[in-house]
Amino acid sequence: MNIAIHGVCGQMGRTVLQIAQQENKIHNIYGVDIQAGNLEIEVYRNLYDIPEKVDVIIDFSSPQSLQNMLAFAIEKNIPIVLATTGFTSKQLAEINEIAKKIAIFKTANFSIGINVLEYLVEKTANILGNRFDIEIIEKHHNVKKDAPSGTAYMLAESVKKGFAKDMHFIYGREGIGNVREKNTIGIHAVRGGTIVGEHEVLFCGDDEIITLSHSARSKKIFAIGAIQAALFIHKKKAGLYNMQDILSTLFDIER
Image 1: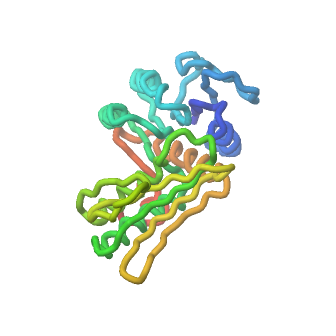
Image 2: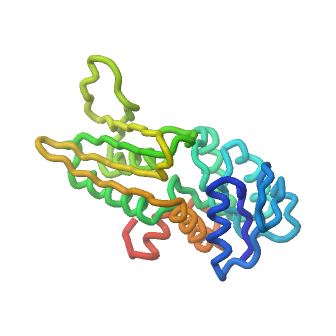
Image 3: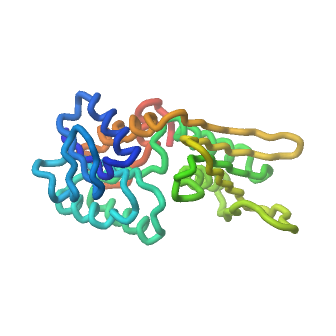
């Protein structure tokens, strides 16, 4: 199949390009980016400039590029692997609506390991109920723009699903009188150096703590996951897909 890497000149876009070049099921790779890049493939400024047919778009660009990309994908009936984070609630609603027309693969994290962690977090929350307090700590490099990370939110939503109840998020704590309230999830962001990505979910009970964690050692794991997603979503019918769909296929995990 032929793929377009949207945001190819960024760090993740370049990594996806390297992995895609090693995949024998991918025939042609087209780069798209508003920035110029010294790459071994031609880079187009706009998806509409690509001269050949594209089968799947892999997006590692920015939320500002969403509308143009969605318009192109609908017009050409092309599935999207959506790897960008930091969307507004309005944009998320638009993505959900567009998924009724084309196939969209959306996840905050393409690591197989982090998605196994998401599964374990939900199951653990379901077993423990709300007898344990939940705190999530995420760590990333010093140039990451959004905080908390999309993965931290993904893990927090898994806790809510496991508890089967609505909970509100507390972002860090400061000052006096911050006694922990019930039905809350604490989310804390650390930014420093070249940390690729680390996530911890703490289940804090009376005299015991259960910690579920994941540490990414390179960006390669996210690129591999994005390519797996592109192969998975190719020729899929309209709908919203995520890494749990791949996990259920690879490891026979119940969703």
